Amino acid sequence: FSGFLRWDDLSQLHADDVCFCDGYVALFLEKRKNDQFREGHWICIAQTHNNTCPVSLLRRFLRTSKSSGHVKLFRRIANFRDNLSLRCEPISYTRAREKVLLLLSSIGLDSSKYGLHSLRAGGASAATAMGIPDRLIAHHGGWRSVQAREGYILESESSVLSVSRSLGL
Image 1 (tube, rainbow, N blue to C red):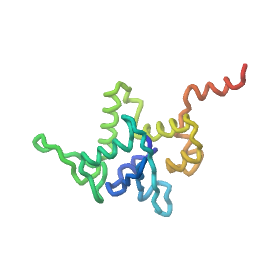
Image 2: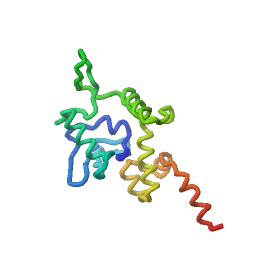
Image 3: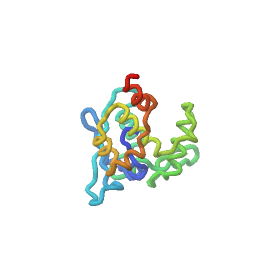
Image 4: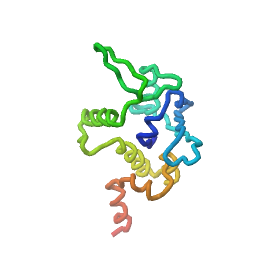
């Protein structure tokens, strides 16, 4: 959500692509869809100090999974005689989607309305609603064209109503 990452970006992350800094985490994406020269790209995500802080949650995930070095960050789980362990293979798109939808259902949301890309769109839409400049949103999400970025942004009801409200009639 906070990284505006595509599934392909997320699934390619390794434990050593994560760098915890003072007040934020930096994720190194070795290649992105629009990275024609394969220069790589850093995504910085701020620490928020609340229950949903992405930096704290990622730190806890790394500690719990005991992931380090050049292993995929999100891997398949093996269940052998009620003993869970992480395998070397990355988690599949289908399984990641199943897990996200299950979590959304568990908090009372209609999971039929969501997919993995919903997190990317939701993060970008939330940033837009908070007044973050388009240029920063495009850079953070790796969008090269206005049309591509705009396809992800859903305007809030209050934003839509602000247009006619601003007329002062």
